[in-house]
Amino acid sequence: MENNKTVDVLNNLLQITNDRLEGFKNVDAKMISSYPKLRDEYDHGVIQSNRFRTELSTLITEKGGDPNDTATVAGGLHRTWIDVKNSLSFDKGEVTLENVLFGEGAAIKAFEKALDSGDLCPESSKVVQDQLHELKASYRKFESLEENNETE
Image (tube, helix red, strand yellow):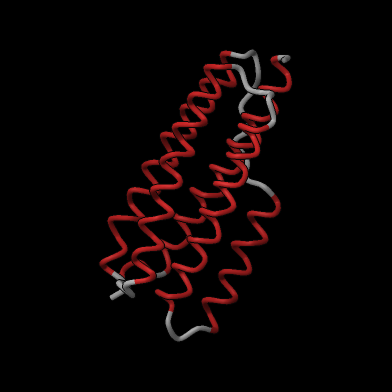
């Protein structure tokens, strides 16, 4: 295993985390005031994403890499699609939860793929595994809100 591979995988996860953070900020800015029961979960998502960014950036730097603090093109396109979809929907809370679940699911898949790649050192694997565990818990919380229709 080479540091370059580890740095590449970690930078990919950093970009996914940046997508996640931008998604939460985007939702918060446009809809959260209309759906107060979601506020705590969105706030938690922003705080959690910022912590993930710090942890991943630290690992990248320790491995001699430069953290890539951009988001992905796919994430940007997805956020644009969400904006269009939300502008056409009457129930913005339901659409928002669907989009959050989609984004959380995509992040979970990316973190699982990173762990399965074999390109992470033990320290990096531990951090990524811990973050994956938190992502799955976040997904379950939003899924529960959607199932219980707790947007209002």
